[in-house]
Image 1: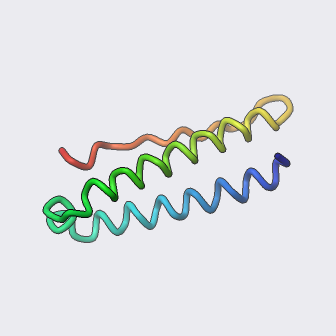
Image 2: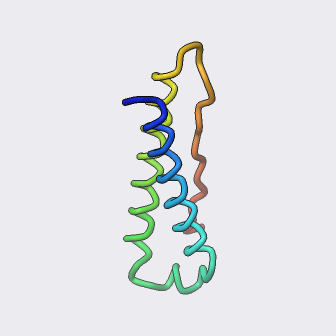
Length: 78
């Protein structure tokens, strides 16, 4: 995959991830008490996996190294 295409895909996935995290932070009590908890957590972990995979591909596409994005997540259930 071309570097520019990888960067665009990475940007989109990061934006989706940020929106999901913001949604979860808006009202954490509702999030933790709702039936959507497991679904949202699954979606969050899937996004993190996509972002990591795209980041790794991006590093592989770059010559001479580059910035590797590591997405750190905090367990929201604590």
